[in-house]
Image 1 (cartoon, rainbow, N blue to C red):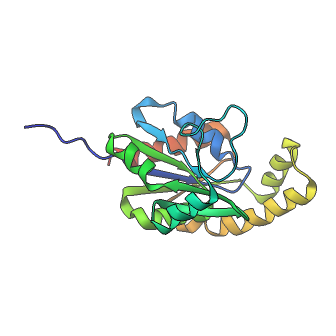
Image 2 (image 1 turned 180 degrees about the horizontal axis):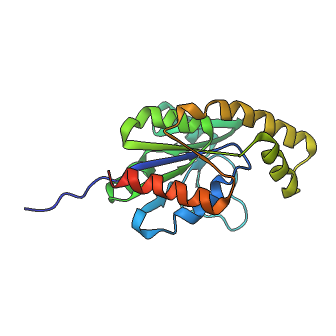
Image 3 (image 1 turned 135 degrees about the vertical axis):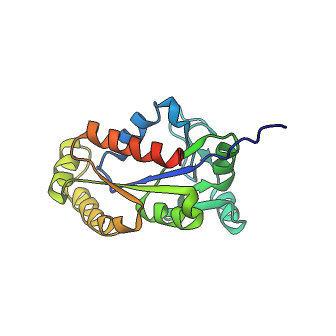
Length: 194
């Protein structure tokens, strides 16, 4: 009798900007035992130098993106700026899961809540939280990439996002990166082996 390939699971990781979410994901994805594959997002922005369609993003026109929304081809999306959309194609999630691999999604907090709502027990949602708002502000300032006004906006948004953390399955406080990586990895391991 042929063996049926087990469908992969979905791991959602969300956090306010500056909490180390991408760094944590980049470390965890190296663990081959977890069979994680990063989901490629769709966007209407122009490709940057060196970016390739289907590798970095699926680059779409605004009309094509709106058609994908109408046809329910995205599991979540957001218009970040007028005419600038980002979203997660349903086909990308299914492609990875049908190969028996686990999908890892790096998406904003509201997107994470929406995807968890759609997938229920098939998904694990993890919220990466800063030790405090002051620590988050210091991290954003130390990057040296944004104006004080932009940092204030991000910190205010982070306050709202942290208030949503209770809607996630698990919360990991990123006080020390190595500890946060290990804790997140253990949560994912327990979920995919369940």
